[in-house]
Image (cartoon, rainbow, N blue to C red):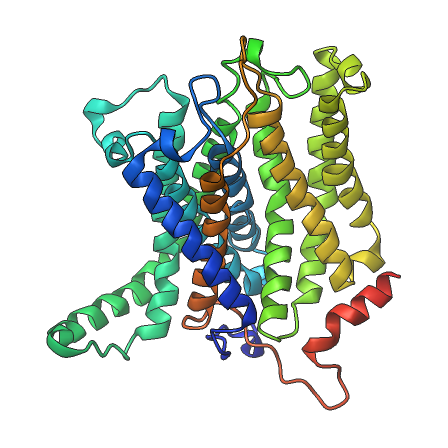
Length: 421
């Protein structure tokens, strides 16, 4: 990493008009979350025996896990394939993945009837090797631990030699500083092992999420039911990894009024059309082998949703990102990455909610206000925690000093939009 790209805490006011709105939304979400924990699922959700999974699974868990894939895809590119120029975006991607998985677990606790028993899979006596959810749970727990271990060198870089705990905790200063020194000196030597472990674990549970609905062939619409759903879930998660990193980088640079890493983002955007093309090819092959094409063009609402998912979430961004001018434009990168992200979220909602149909339904599921508030509240809280961490830890790279005559960061979006036009 070049000297001018050395990561440092971002200097900016924490509170702004946007963060105040997010704080209110997060507060409402936390209140709804606490209400659910005390009064149960029946009092706070529209879930029942016919519709046991709602938006907390389709959005908070399935979509959240997929969108956190930028951590392992970027780490693999920079550290396993030794693409050194991408190290500048590894730390933000790692933080996004770490917070993403953390909030996935928090969201999952809301969906568990007996959330206080979530620790049971840690006991070998309670293992169930035939359960897909058991494999997902174990992989997520281990991978989340790996992510926090990968973040430790950043903590050590920030506080090593500067530990100054207040009051009675002062006696721990030397111990904590020694521990941070050990982490900084030795952990970095073995960090590649944890990165490889993270990639393997991510591939395991990303694919296993696609296995969850394989056991319900009679309750799934043929457009989304497939025996190779695990493969398609994995491919879509890999494809959305770089777009999520691009989206996070552009939004955070705009929020903190710093120039975006456009050359690096433009470079990793080149991989996305290839990954999307692989996913689309597998999808087309699957529809052909299962002879499901008639359902695509039957004119039903589900067929229209499927076509929209493919055209807007796969084809459109793949075409856009093959155009060099779009990849060089901040607005073009933002629009294209947003389409991929929206397409993956749309796919998870379609799989877990739209495609699923109970055999003898007596009503249609629609999320309650508590479900909606918990979901948007978790997203708002994640953004606030992300902002706090990047303002206190060396995550985002320092931009080079802007020479005289070069446009400031505040004007990039308007100029980029003009470029696209």
